[in-house]
Image (cartoon, rainbow, N blue to C red; front, side, top):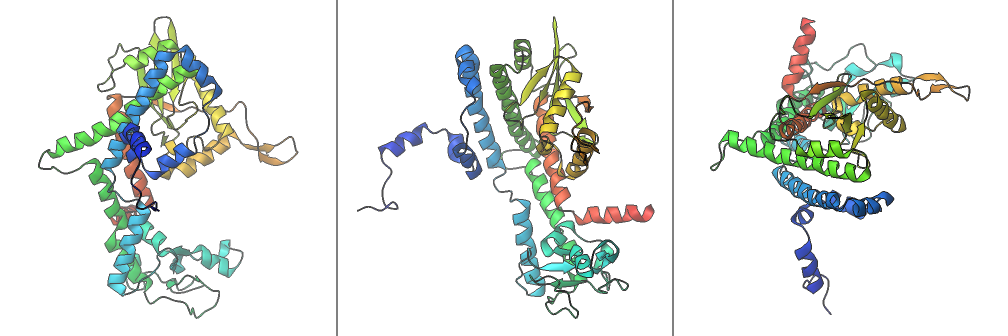
Length: 426
């Protein structure tokens, strides 16, 4: 009896294989999981498809095109490891080479004596735990030059006078420490500065967006090819959202027609009925979020494009005030609604300000002082018109965000030294 390993694909497999689009064959596992977990289509969709069959066909075609473009971009970045994988491998190998130790960098820890603060901890052990970081975390955040100097991580007046590296049991509450690892804290700091995981990884990310010349392409041509691929994904996502929004009735026919007709590969003329703008919320740029303004004969409106909103990525409003109120309502329903559009370095402060603005602390109907939604809260995102083509702006914004996030999660030695110099000057 043949086993699954030896059975050759049958006619049904061949039939399915030849009808499966290339993007689906090449899609990563997370895409397949998302498709398996996909919920039933909304009830309104079947009626909309029958009512607007041409738009439904255009939506289907654009969806397939979008997937093809996504597959092309995934291929461009298939050799770029994620930061955690890269950092673990790089740090583990460097420790092995320099110190002759094979350590689990997730579960080996640096107790940084300089960070022990007994004034703000309920007990001494908690104070030490708060000053304890994994070797991986320490390497990603890096060290200043002084930390790598002789006795650079000592703290004579702290609960522990010397920083120490300990095994998976962390600090066990007693001294002398019996589970110390045979690496001086200053030597670890020197290794991390020299290794410069943040600088290395940012270099990898940057090189994917700005590749060197090849035998076939100059450096400029290679880079243009990358940004064109990124731009095609952004354009197809936008057009797919236009079709979907029109099917749903979230935008008018006037906006739909005008936006589809806009050239995406060149700056818009001064007479264009449609304009695009970035949106900033306080100091945070909302990556991928676009304010669309329509000035057509007899029809003026604004629309908000939020591509990560799968239920309503594009919605038209009669006025800017109505748009701002709509955004407020979405955020009050889900304070994390814009998270994917906010750079990682800006997430925490922006979330805090959103909570304070939308749900200030006040006396609730329960007689408790707690966060209460303010139905009259206002948000005033700042708009800045695109000065370049939609395709290029959207691609460049995503690339810049990728590099910024990499720098936030893994600090290059150069940036550490720059901050130190600025602090000394201040």
